Image 1 (cartoon, rainbow, N blue to C red):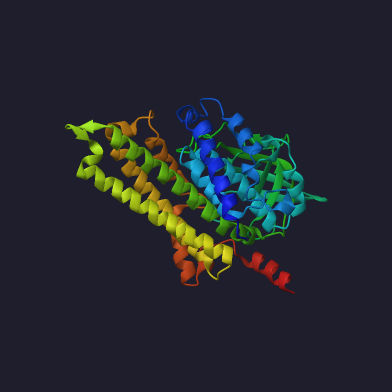
Image 2: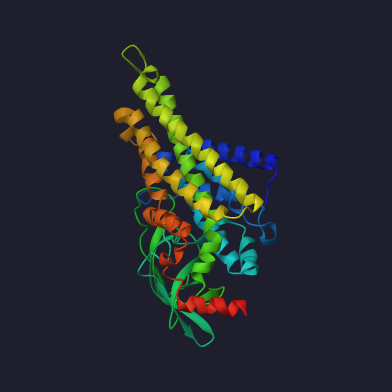
Length: 393
């Protein structure tokens, strides 16, 4: 779906202004979480501005602005602080999984919440369930399913009521997704995990003991639902890394223009100019590449999903190099929390793990090109294939 350019500009303007007024002034304080207070009021303000409804289709209670608008929103917010972008991303992942699983009616009901705390849906967005050895288990108890076991690093698990949980089902290969109420007494949550970056995008380790759960989609189709949601969300992840990269370049350039050494501005020194040039080139290439894939996605071009995976991996890697240069551009000040560069460095590193470990995502792209993605997604098992065959009949 293509979004009117005028609407894109309005969303961009709103995101830039929000980031400048709400995120930038207290970025350092927000980064102290979980040892400081959570920026819940900021999340509520973002909710009131419909940031959380941007990509959700209109028939499901959202604004229906599409993935391009969502990417613009994330990029501009992450230029100041990627934590809010992480909150938006995790919630959108849950929405995409539920949509792919055919749970639109349930999602529409949840989208009618009047405040963010009731609207948020937790999701383990920093892994692919097929890559981690231990996820929750789901067993059938009479006319319902019940979750047991543990799930590590459940993003938004400390602030959301609902969660989309990947779980292995008894007697069936692969995994399935379930919707669970985190307020159930059978849920035990750890303290908020201290992360490398995105510290105000909270995550917890969760333990389940007979927690009632609603099966989302068909049993054993977890990989199918993940793969349906992943291409668009991979583009959103790339937009977040672009935002971090853009913020790092902007601060490095501003510092170079302000700081003097040897009787002239340091931006006039060739060494710094080379660093800034590399950052600017990487940023421009990333923007053009993302724009190209977004256009292909909107046009429904064949193979855009593979291009999304490649472009996202490249942007995320380039962002890590760029923010490292951004730290260097400020000299010793770049390592101080007074500036935003060291935080951006940590954020960029962690963003690489969205929807799976960075090395495995790159290997996955190679295997997809070679027609051997079956070697990567171990959950594409006999049980899943049986379900797939039933669906074709």
